[in-house]
Image (cartoon, rainbow, N blue to C red):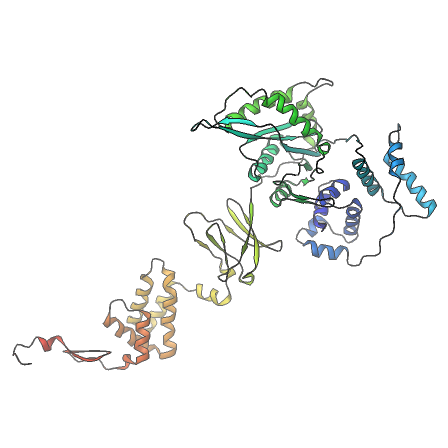
Length: 512
């Protein structure tokens, strides 16, 4: 499904319709149609940023009319004409429009006309010169040749993978080695490249590797979620090159070959004991490479980059923070588990599957693309809980509003012995809150039996043991033992009847 929000976002970055169509996996006619409808309704990226794609689709296309039939141009003829001096696509499109009007047919707009011509060029293996604009594109890829470092403990040779980013206009490049081609290395390489260039291009052109692009079909390119997040953070667009089409990113392909010869081959006989040493040597060789004069024109990549740099977008205040995603199910206790730690979610989402975004410092929870809560990330012992009161059902919220002082104050109004039992409940746990449930249950007994009977039952329970339980107080009230008269001196009573007291056995007259 076409993402209309992404079309408006890329348009707000000043990216042309052709690039937007390529990045969103749709035709340029669709892009133009969406932008025109958004303009008619006064919609912009700023006004639709909080909408879902479904809501935006309903706003833009509440009633679709039948699409007219367009006349397909003769691209064999157009391609032959393009080989002639002074002939441009714009001129040929105007001639095509005149022919359609004469025959009463509907012509394609220039953007669609140009797109079909590009598709024709691709299908016939024809080539065309691509004009580059300063600060527009950054092409990225992994070099095919690897570097090596030596493990200081085992002496084993470890492969290091080389990331290359190049700016087509100037040929200025960034190179860095990593121990893996995983997503963390891929994202870190982009962040470091932007820092090295001191700015951001409007478009990124990666190859179709899994760390950047999840799926590429004829009509759609699905960008990896973390990679898309990074692009949005830096205000750029990811437009993958076509599958098995290195000509879509010729600058980085050429830079990879040059760098493999100029840098990696030159370092082949050196031994490096750490990735830091290797990257320091690569950086030194890279700077020499960038200052090296061109053979067939004046200047160098560095001097051309000085012209290009003012056209780069500014860096954000903070670099992108790498995040990972997982799917979790909200449990009946309205918490989710993330790496053995528990985080609360609004209770309305119990048993729903949610998307969890995990960064070094924050846990964010999303449902159907909307963020529903966030927590500071917990570290340390397992099964810690981060619970927000607003996420609890109403009856649970009432419970957590109680605290130890409030229970003590309530018990003091009932009596001295009730207060003593409450203090015992609160002090018998490592965490005071663990005793709240027993305290609440004990004090609620006053509603069922009366304040006087509860005080009497607590007195009776304390006479039996120094640490009475809630069950013992409940048993006394239920059996009515709190109503029995106080024992006479010399005798004691129990739930089993009267027993002889200590005075009975202390008599010295010898009588039984």
